[in-house]
Length: 612
Image (cartoon, rainbow, N blue to C red):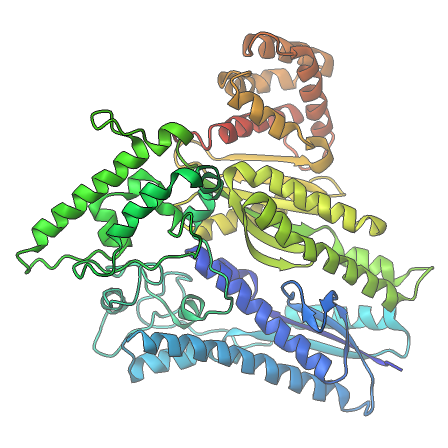
């Protein structure tokens, strides 16, 4: 008989993930959190515990990432000691796994020849201490009064512990701060008064590529940042934001990229001693390089010096000629991309256009999951623990579909996949279709439980700071969950490189396929690109009209700004009805203005971000 219930969780989560300047930080940060949760879950199972949440293991292995909240039942032999024994064992395994991850990163850094001394080690040891970084919460409650009562007691206990802030508050650290958090002291050795100078020297090491540390002291890492950069938890490569932005372009143009790929291969030839070899980021034959190299703005001597470690010694009399040779080769590369009429070279851009400079970061999260579980505990048809476990298993079934939807079907990049909590990146053209596909899979898998999901999407330039995109995606997710009592919505924040940012939101069912249809109409020039801004400009006036008058005015605008044969009446009805439904939602400014902003987004999507 199982007669104890365990609740286990740890933090920080959001700040740990959000401290990221590039995709590698985000990817590895999420992988570390999942790895630590797996270590705790394994410890629970080793002690005879039966996991209620998460579920979904196959042959003893989790098919998805493990969340930072674990719920398990235990057989209790010694009532007075079970809680202490379980807690000590889990914490020991958790801290051992964290230490192993840190040791792996440290060994990697030593192998690269990064200078380390006593001063450096003191900063490292202080920052990676488990009690310095991690807050671990646990509660064990007897099941004497049943599963539902024990679950609620444990949940309240965990909430109380978190509010009490019983963990040590970190002290202000002296010295230059790291680039990712801006709070902790950056690692450095005793012979450097400024961490910036130390990291500038580290970036000059032959095996420390710009993908690890940006040159000239533009990045300074503390111990936590360094663990994210140098620990290697997954065998699969991570994609940069540039590669994500260009992913759909690579798929479309891969048959025409061979000549350009081979020319880059000669540039990065490791036999050329004057250049530092650039490490290929993937093993894909069609395109083995970072997507950044598909943008002609990258193909300058300055960018290759700063971002690709092309080094010229000013004291070497040959350096000037070598730099000129690089400039000429980069000119050839630009000709292959953009074309050259004089040389009669038809560029890849002429055939396929330019890759979009924007990508999407998508955060998907189940709505009111705590309330849903609380409702399951009062089930009249099932035992509470069985109902909770079945709910967890369904979440596991959804997780098992996520990678196929994100990677295989939408050329996206999966960052985190933990039940109802998903984070992924995708090229701009796939942003809305991917969000809808994930929602549809969740809806279908969880239909028996009548639970919904909301999404926040941040659309950002591939060269903008990633931490800003993460923050905006989280804000968008929170905004989506403020829509109506049922939530069940999507909110998108667009951070344009120039011009005003854009924010749109809608219920899933109200939006349906309409955005993709509008994107297609704008792309085919069936709808004039001016339409979106005309409707947006007139929205304040039209909002005050009765629905019928709004539809009539919208029909006039659609006729004026569309090609012959366009069914303005049908579309005026569709858009008017969408606006009416959004008008009825709480948390939406007004439905017509919201609809107008969605038109602006559809136009933006149709022009790949409008920066061609």
